[in-house]
Each structure stands twice: as structure tokens, then as C-alpha cells.
Amino acid sequence: MAGELPSSSSFFLQHGGVPVTAILLVWGLQITPEKGAFKRALYWSWGYMALTMTINWAIGQHYGFLNGVPEVRTLFDYMGPSPYYLIIPRVVHERKKAIKRIC
Image (cartoon, rainbow, N blue to C red; front, side, top):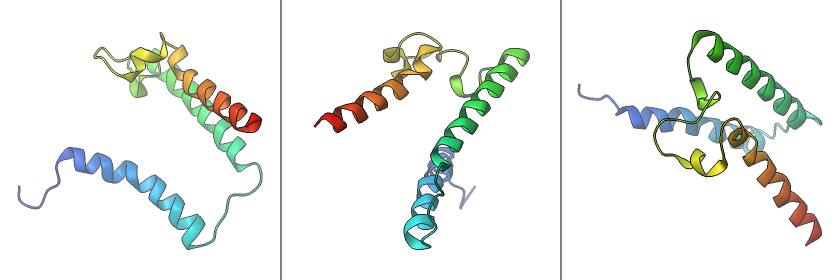
């Protein structure tokens, strides 16, 4: 149909809206996060991940690749077996912060 976006465009518009909104709120409207907001967001994300993994297991689904790596080759293949590939990005981030503190 004329005027419809391809599905890939919709994906990038939806996911690109999150960082654009964050930048607009902080720099455009001068709304900054409160102290402890990062930790709260992290804990809520872990809770959501645990709930989603439980629901995935209960209904036999695989939303977000939380219960295992995809069947096709992806970057997950280089981050170890399930569930360790969920932890690797966090470990890399912490090591990067530690290196920055040393230098």
C-alpha cells in the first residue's frame, strides 16, 4: 500500500525514539534524573527480566532471547552459553569503568 513504511523502518523508529526522548528531556527540557534513578532502573530491569524469563518458561516461548540464544548465528554466540550471555555485557562495562579509574 502507498504511504506505508517497511517493517524495518517501524522497528528503528520505535527503538530510536527512546534515546531521542531521553536527550530531549535532559538537554531540551532540562529534566534530569533524580539521585539513585540509575540503580532503580537497573533493579526494575532485572525484575522485568526475571518475570519475563519465568513467563517464557511457563508458556514455552522465547521472548527477548532471555531463555537461550537464537537458533541463527548472532553476536550472542561470542558471549558464551545461556544464561551467561546476559551477564557478559555487564562484566565488560564494569571492567571498562575500572580501567578508566586507573588511567
